[in-house]
Image 1 (tube, rainbow, N blue to C red):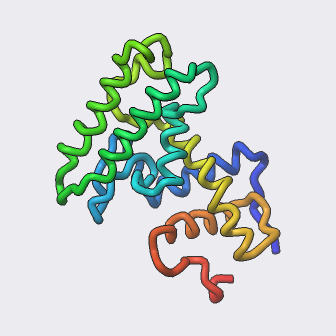
Image 2: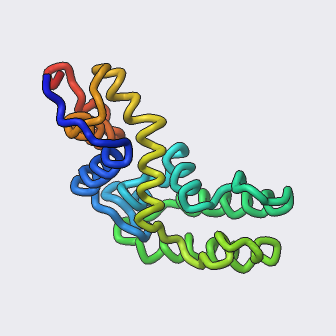
Length: 187
């Protein structure tokens, strides 16, 4: 088989990101998906613990950021818990106008917490908004820890290539369904 291989890891990651963002809409602000699940970025389900952790890490909403004191870590964990609680509220269709303020209120309080104000990655972030580089970082981490492994388990030995990026996209887009898009007939 002739693979259309990528020149480097970065080229492959960019290809994979571009492919996925053609299938999944990218949104910097949180929204409710078709099932009223709080979502952000490249279809990141904020109720899924693994996905949310990767999103928060990319946004530096994270107790493991270097340099935090134990008191700052405790405060940060409190804000993380409040954000998680806001993502687990029950939202009706079209209530994006409620979701966004709920998350923004936590971010505003976090940014103005006297204990955290000296931290530049916190102090300037008054709202819950995910940048494109943060989306890329979260997606790369999710790919590395989950979806690339799913492709390898399905069919080992596929190099970093256009074909592999397409298969990873299928694995990612079947993550919430009961059946995988990587079926035996596709192999």
